Amino acid sequence: MPDQPMTTMISASEAEQLIGDRLGQFAAESRSIDSAAGHILRQPIVAERDQPPFDRVTMDGMAIRFEDFSRGTRSFDIAGMQAAGMAPMAMHQEDACIEVMTGAVMPDGGDTVIAVEQTRREGSQLVVADNYEPQRGQFIHRRGSDCRAGETLIEIGARLRAPEIAVIAANGYGSIEVSTQPRVTILATGDELVDVEAPVAAWQIRRSNDRALAALLASRGLNEVQLKHVTDDRDVLKAAIAEQLDTQDVLILSGGVSMGQRDFVPGVLSELGVQRVFHKIAQRPGKPMWFGMGPKGQAVFALPGNPVSVLVCATRYVMPALLAAMGRTAPPPTCVALAAPIDFAAALTYFVPVRMQPDAAGLPVAVPLPTQTSGDFSALTQTDGFVELPPERSHFPAGFIATYYPW
Image (cartoon, rainbow, N blue to C red; front, side, top):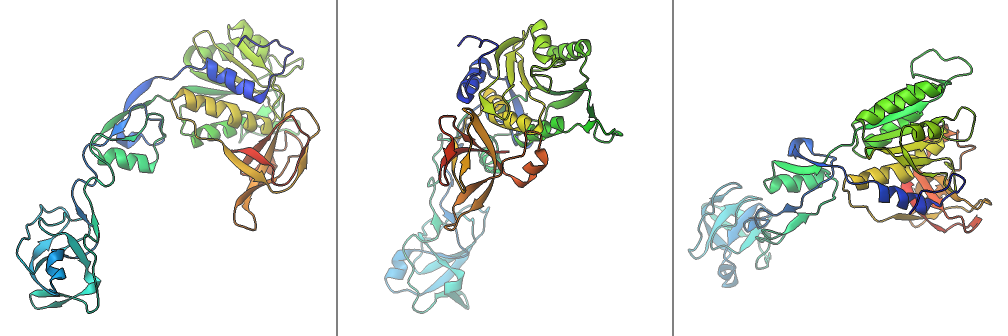
């Protein structure tokens, strides 16, 4: 798709498509399993052997041959004890049992486990409790019932959470191929901004957009992030952006992207060889969003300065694009029902902050909590994310199904 004319507003879906089409895939690297949590997998994980690798006892008790019980035997001679981690014992004599522990190998010759609660000890024998009737094969986790050797357990593109790390470790992978972390700079622009702990005049505000963006990136596993601030001076801005383009893979700017006299970002990016892909999306909030690609393939996202717009645009476009470039398999969209009606007259995609709560049936629904303005970020602490409402209609009744994006 060709670059969009400056005056053309594209749809939210077109913006998503254009970003995805332009971003390549970040490189892969080998990482120790101990430092791979949160990363995106770039190799398949294959079962080293059958799981479980042996018939595994799942209950403390005694192992017997069911045929002995079926002949009427209820008192069994104790032939030994099989604990977890021990090589399998043999049990072939009639009317004998082996005491077994959870996790142990099923003794050779045994085929049924009776729980210790259903037995009593009488000298050198274990006796099955009166009126208890075991089932053949009970309390045995059969070899290969979870997976077979050579089976693919985790596909490329998975984010490595605790369950994935457990599977990787259990199958002998000490190091694995994962996506590299892109080097990201968040550049906040504006004369009105001061740092978090700096003295603040009545006409100034503390920097928060960059911290919010960094927190959003960290919540998705991206930690190679640095924060910068630059004033609304064209030459200073140009020097700062040029420096970041030399070293970073991704540049996210906040502010200076609209049509005001001191909104220098689009012009400076063009002068530095960053190719504009689009500028302006038919949405609220976040209409002035700008996206382009640097001369070395750097991804440049220039977001509006209003705090709600920043978080909405970053959540809706920036994060999915970066995760896709890292090789992550995109999860299916999350759809939720509105808990209350909402109206929006403008022919724009409308992003509405919502709080998720259960309805009378216990099912999750989205309670709309629109902000007063796109600068009303204090209200976002009462929300869990936002829903995307399409531009084709103006009334959205309770029960309307919308796509949900968590913060």
